[in-house]
Length: 187
Image 1 (tube, rainbow, N blue to C red):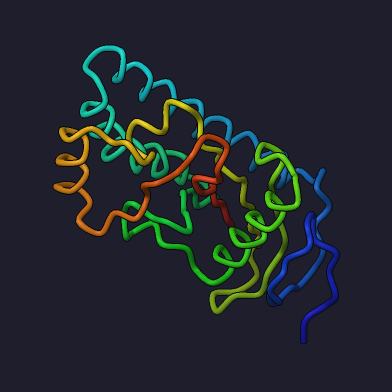
Image 2: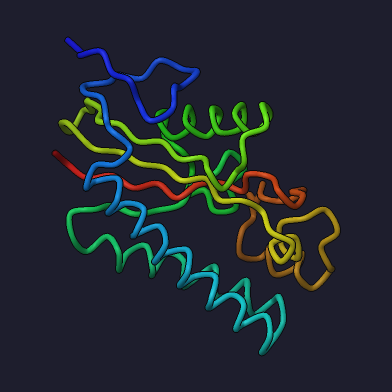
């Protein structure tokens, strides 16, 4: 039913693989460019909000602009999003494939691989047909700790609690895997 594959990075969990994916295909290059655009746009807006109005304003940017940027990038063939093992927004919960990739990223980090190098792609068979899927790990930087660290100020906690009642995205340290960009398109 499924063809054997040699993915970009081997997964710890078995996934329904249809074909192998070379890390230098046009799909991977396009996915990387979209991640760069998503991450660069969001980071730029977050930094600007932090400088202008502080971390509570930055939370508003993350709450509204991150989904808008993902939606803008998802206008073509791609579906673009973010996910994590510890989500802030329940709408970003990983599916089984994403969960397995995120767990593998954590294992690779534990083995000493740099978070910035963690990416994975493959072609998979889904209930909706064959899809190309790609994920790129998001590292936790110092600035992220204002809202995702262990020592979050009371005003920031209050705003996070109001916007995200099921928030699990706290307690990170610099260099942790905060989550991943996740992209897909039908084949």
